[in-house]
Length: 161
Image 1 (cartoon, rainbow, N blue to C red):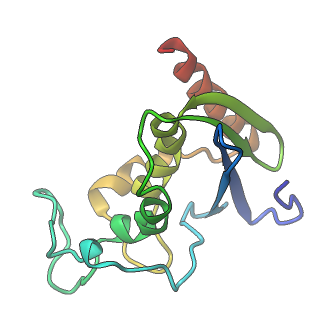
Image 2: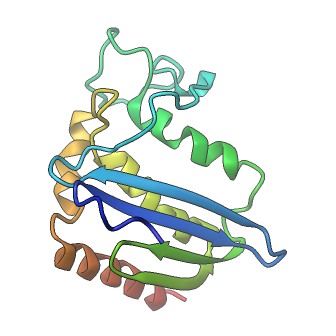
């Protein structure tokens, strides 16, 4: 269970359990005040994370940025699941300081909330993608709102299964 003693950090611990009993864990930490990602500074930067590799049409970042901040944040996730199939069955457990959520679903649905957080929150180590950071307010500010949002996300998953 994530440590609840640090009120400065919002933590989400995702555990993906697969039918063959393998597990993969990912922790997403946000600064509780700024909602910046509290990421490691030594994230992998494969060639495909370079901004010039395939810059989005509407991307406001210029030549002063070598890497796409969203791609760098996603790189470990992509590497970990590169041999997986999006519709593969998995049991996803999300632990917060307050609760544990668990759902049998597909890998793509389980990963979607992590990807969403990586795309819209600013990164303390890199400049944010301004266009996407406007959606950061969707990342909950209070415990009650965060829990309600997570409950809503998981309830939405069940509507389509």
